[in-house]
Amino acid sequence: MSAAADLLQRLSDIGATVRPAGDKLVIRAGLRPVPADLVKRLRVGKADVLAALVSPALLRDAPWWHREFLVRKLGWLTGNRTVIEAEGLAFQQLVLEWHRQYGTRFAGWQCAGCGEPIGGLGSIDFQDGNRVHFDEERACLIRFGRHWRGTATQALIAMGLRPPTGRTFDD
Image 1 (cartoon, one colour):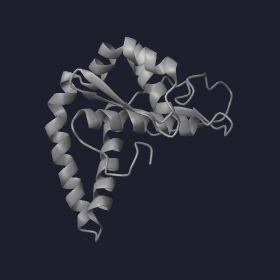
Image 2: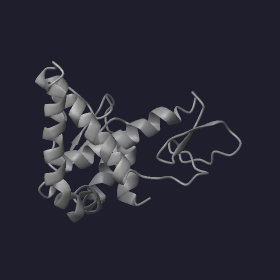
Image 3: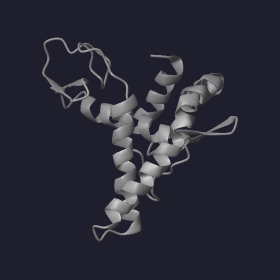
Image 4: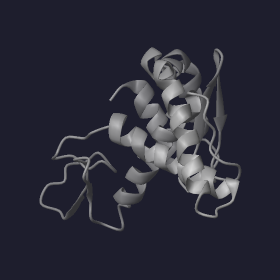
C-alpha cells in the first residue's frame, strides 16, 4: 500500500474526507477531530495524495459516472421517492459499483479491516475476495466498511459527484 493510500485509509478510518480543490486539499473531519500528526503527514504528502485522488484514468471516466448517477436517480424517482432519497440511493449504488471495479483487494491471508493475518481465527468472506476477522472487539468489519465506502466516495467526489446533503460517506 502506498503512503498516500495508507494516509487516505487512516483519515477514512476516523471518518474524515479529503477532496482535491485545484492544487489544494480540502479535509473535513468526521465525528472525531483529525489528529495533528495526520494533518502534518497530509501536508508533507500532499502531492502524492492529490495524484491518488485525481488520476487521469479517473477523470477520463467521470462523464460515465455522471450519466450513471442521473440514470439511477431517475430510476429511483419512479418508485415514489423524494429527490433526496433517490439521489442518496443512486449515490450509494455508485459507491458500491466503484468498489466493485476499483476497490482494494487484500491477500487471502490478510484481514481487510486491520491488515493482520487471519490465521486460524474465524473470518467473514466477501464476494470481492476480501476477508475480515469475525471478532467484535477488533471491529474489522466496521473498519473495512468505512474504508471501502470512504475510498469510493472520495473517488466519486474527485470526479465532481457529491453525496446528497446531510449524508456522510459511511451512512
